Picture 1 (cartoon, one colour):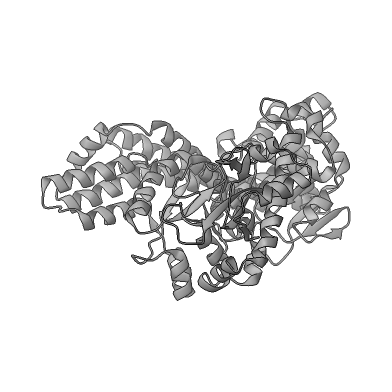
Picture 2 (cartoon, helix red, strand yellow):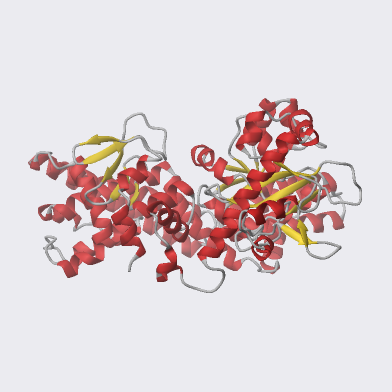
Amino acid sequence: MDAKEDIREKLAIEDVVGEYVQLKRAGRTWKGLSPFSSEKTPSFVVSPEKQIWHDFSSGRGGDIFTFIQEMEGVDFKEALAILARRAGLDLEQYKQLAGSGPSSKTKERLYEASELAARFYQEHFKKSKLAYEYVLGKRQFTRETALVWRLGYSPNNGSALVDFLKSKGFSEAELKLAGLTSKSYRGGVQDMFRGRLMIPLADAQGRIIGFTARLLEDNPQAPKYINTPSTPIYDKSRHVFGLHHAKEAIRKTKFAVLAEGNLDVIASHQAGVRQVVATAGTALTEPHLKALSRLTGDIRLCFDADKAGVAATERAIPVAARAGVSLQIITIPRGKDPDELIKQDVKVWKEIIEKPLYVVDWLVDRYTEELDLSTAVGKRTLSDVVLRVVRQLPDKVEQDHYIGRLAGLLEVSKDALQDKLQHTADETAPVRRRQIAQTASAKVIDKAMVDKFKTEEHLMALTLLLPRLRSHLYALDPEMFDSPQNREVFEFLAEHPDFDGKDSKQVKKIAEYGKILALVYETLYQDVDPLELDNETQRLKVSLVNQYVRIQKRVLAQQLQTAEAKEAEQLLARVRDLDKLLRTEQEGNESGAEER
């Protein structure tokens, strides 16, 4: 039994995609506007025959599972679970999800109990004057906001929720496992949450997994907030509050704002700024950032300006480095939190999240304000703090920039700081490797790199489907391809220049991506005159070489800034070789055009 194949049989790809993208039939395919870019002409294509989709505006594509991963911001395992539910399949029957821990049936019971608890709290919210006045009065949330975020109230009479859920067939063991009960002083169990505003916590798909409960009555002996303890379905070190409501806005704006409080998030969404999420308190973890990195690599932190918030911001810096995301800091006026600022002037809130400060600049500015840089102690402290972060930066030019800035502030030589940098504890060596990998994948976001991926893809589509055009590939090398999939097809064609698609053993290696290339060919080139296809292949080849040379020269230019004399000579020789390669291809293209 294969869960993937059974899901493919039960779910039509055009139906799944159609829940996210408005599609219209176009012959044997369906077309719609790209969900990944702001386009006006449809370039998003779905092929039911091949069971694949492709977005021509961004170069993304894949099958039903990769689509759910892209749209929901989840990994493959979660995408499989989402589609299995839609297909009505029980993944317990399949080995893909076999392993230790609670079964899927147990987890489903916990999801059901949490969902019923949320509805129970919502019903009691309607009856609680205290909760109503706090939410609609003090917090100035609308009724619609309270409904969208499913705000509730936990009655303060001991076991109201326990009694309700028991009447629905849940055992005390299940309610304890769901984090909904606690031990009573008199023995037995009671409700975990009593007399509090209930804020449901949902996973990326909107399923209730726990609660944050805020105290409403003045009681200095009780904590203001309490959360659901860790359960098989809730882990505060991984949960990002509001992600199910924010992911579409994050995808569109290409950045996420990470706030400190759940109610700050709700206030921002009500004001129309919906790319805002939060963690449980200020304990930011790598899994939090990994979850967001599926949607964007641009994370903007907005913790309170008090001492705890600033300390949390500093702790987030190495965490962001390990997660391979770009961390920027949003500074709000002292003494305010996002909720207060939004109430006062939402325009200011919108402006400041669009003007974040890169984390290293924020760190330099913050400590420069607090320290006396005319003293040796002040200089040492600032250099200690900043160099720990500078060492994590993967780009040598960026490191050099901040060493230069620091040298100017401290009135010391760059050589002294370089020496200190080398002796700074190398606690981030693995981090830099991860960051470099992230930088490579993040190139896709860059327009120039997207254009290059399209060039590679179109060239491979033509040469894979039309063997007579493969002679155009002779002057190219694998290193000219940035896309691993296109590089694999290029190498495959180099090994099998006469490949015609009939040898099933050969085609298996590139079968999945070959489907996407076939869709590209059918969409763009199937009805084009053969002579024009030859011209187009030549144009794509020259364009690929041009793009490759331009990118390589940009990298070499950065390396030359810090290179020693001998290394600089080698780099300059490489630049000359690239210029020669570009001239050769351009001259060959011109002479070929004259012959044609």
